[in-house]
Image 1 (cartoon, one colour):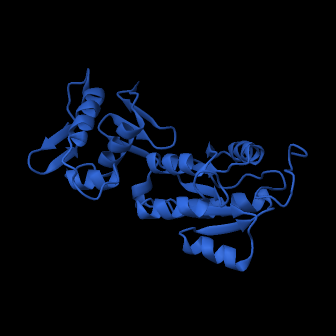
Image 2 (cartoon, one colour; image 1 turned 90 degrees about the vertical axis):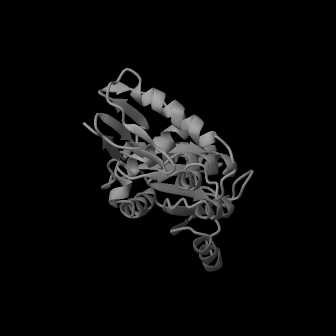
Image 3 (tube, rainbow, N blue to C red; image 1 turned 180 degrees about the vertical axis):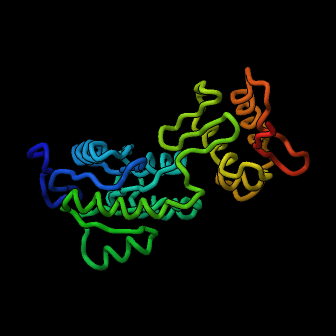
Length: 252
């Protein structure tokens, strides 16, 4: 690190330059998977100053877990990572049906390197060293791809609200703490509010299973979720549709 506005440039798989400049990036949440802690700290601070919520993972396995368990508008992934390399992380995310736009950062900047990264499932590729203003602009462009209705920031069903950015759930103004898997389950149910969600849909989209393992994991989590979002409230929202699945709907 040289100054507050410029990161050291070297031949390793890290490095960025120029101070951050704000863009049209309000309400965005991104994930940075970078093992260079100095570079990651700079990026996290710069993005937050630009109004973007930025989470950080320092290795491929942790990054894969966070990208799978949470919802992000953009993921920035370094290629050379410990525990699991960046291209492997991207390929596994795509295999699991996670379509978060990915921008690859790497000191490997030859044409063949960029082609390999894009073919692995990346949406953009920026060689190091780079200007943060360009990185910010590219993140903004990728974030606009998530503007479809299914990617709304806030889901509402009756007086129940789920905020994807802050990962907060409230009902009647009261905050309801949820575990990561419970949050993901509720998020999927609320995204499909008023529709029957089958066990298979939940297994594939919340647990990433592509078969029924004859487990009661769904029933247990739905029961826990129901007790949390309906405790102390007279109006039930989460319904079991016998022989079909589950539905969250406001009957009021």
